[in-house]
Amino acid sequence: MSHVEPLEDIFAPFALRISCGPLRMRFVRDVDVPEIAAAIHEHGIYSPDQPMPFMRRWAEAGHDLAVNTLQYYYDAFASWSPESWILLLHVSMDGRFVGIQHLEAIQDFRQTRAAETGSWLLRHEQGKGIGTLMRQAVLAFAFDELGAQVLESGGMVGNQASLAVSRKLGYVPNGYRRCVHADGVGWRDVEMYRLAPGDLVRAPYPVKVTGAAAFRASIGLPDAR
Image (cartoon, rainbow, N blue to C red):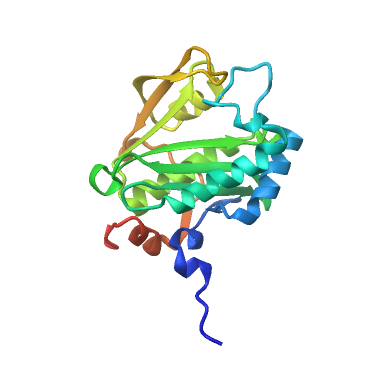
């Protein structure tokens, strides 16, 4: 039988592992989708009496949620290139799935050294400091392992929890971005923040990374940082 390469050797992001104290992050796989969709159905992501934190109502897709989620992740796999990529990280805390953290290149990261973060956390896991820790871990990874110089984040005006995390971690305000309302009618403002390497308020635990060299190669970065 011919040699079969492990999936991690074919697509380097699958080999990436990031840990920070009790938190673990790895690239999302298609086999994770049933768990992700079931967790959203059971727990939800945001309270109905709070402002919609997303640009569209993807978490309310009913029976289409799993299909939409799978298609979104497959699109991220298929469109991966050094010029355009989005790192989608499955996040677990003490072994239980809690949410998704992502890091997305802004234009060509090799040229700009700029990226944007985003995340969501299951509703019953909110208010425990997990969202802060997962953001700290991915920010440290971007600065320390990828040589990022600018990291941006945004939150809908009124989404105080997300905006508070940005301010707490050292981001500075960076204006507003207008987007179409999730209902498709009208618009809302997204409050933008920017973070420089020296301003990051780091986690109380060390951030440990495996698979960083192969990941850098997958986005066209030299191994030497």
